[in-house]
Image (cartoon, rainbow, N blue to C red; front, side, top):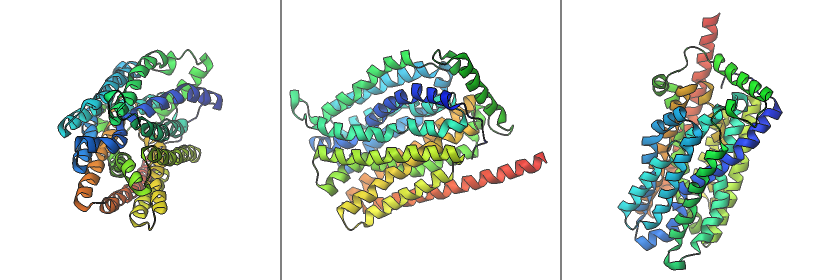
Length: 437
């Protein structure tokens, strides 16, 4: 758990929230939709192009290979030149590459474009988390990060029905439905990049929409938080990249994201298979699950801030995720299987805000930029493993039972590792108190 830091006045916190969070959520909806909309494209694309489950799973996972390789350098560039310019650059390149997927014809082309899309988008998520740490004191941070990450379920609420509807354009103007999907969901990122450049400012000191007293209050709270960090905590990029807690946090969400990205990429096919719904109906069901995820994310982030506790607010949701996978593989009916499957995104979604509020409690400046990016890079290795693992095991067995067991066990290991990190933190605080005495 982080050191207790002072919060800003509720009116100032609300102003920050209203100005920054809704806009950043819109950006994340677009980003996450372009990341996982291959799951809906696969409802038509795999048959049109003759992709096997393994070829689709591996190609989908290549996004995360590029993402992980470029994450840390991208975030360090953002810390140097500012969020406004770098996020705008990220959005232009990822939007163009997301639309380019409409032209792929072979598994190799699919894998290459997905890899480049990952390189292009790298730095967006950890960059925004780092950006929020420059605006929201620790006492307000989990709620802000959790609200920003509600873009994930919102992309499902909006994107599920939208993707299903776009697939209905199949054959229009000579394009397949999956080609329309990539085109119409890729270009908004390019357009929004120009809005980013005009709307965002890089630091509170540049914010003309804050009055002088609000700026002083906010800067004082952030400065007090920075000074409260003890001397042994990482201050340089090198120290952050070598810090064992950073690596353990990355490992926690690596294990969890194996399951989540496996779910995110494959759930449209799984839901359609279980429910027997059409493309649009599948999108509506996926959107309903995402709505439940959004509610859980915001509620858990709020409770984490109010109770000043992080790790239990991560471990318990990851345990719920485990229950979801195990329940899905053993459910006796389609309704129960879908209900259990819904616990997977609800569980991991609830953990997001408290989890990503943790690194900025002991990292600052370039160390925070590097540490958050390393954690996100390690976490997204799960995106490499999950989709490919499900595709490979599906080709072997013809179903999802074996992969559900494996992903559930990984989620449970992530929950146990979270409790271990919590215990290490408690032990470290006790030793620090003994030294001070």
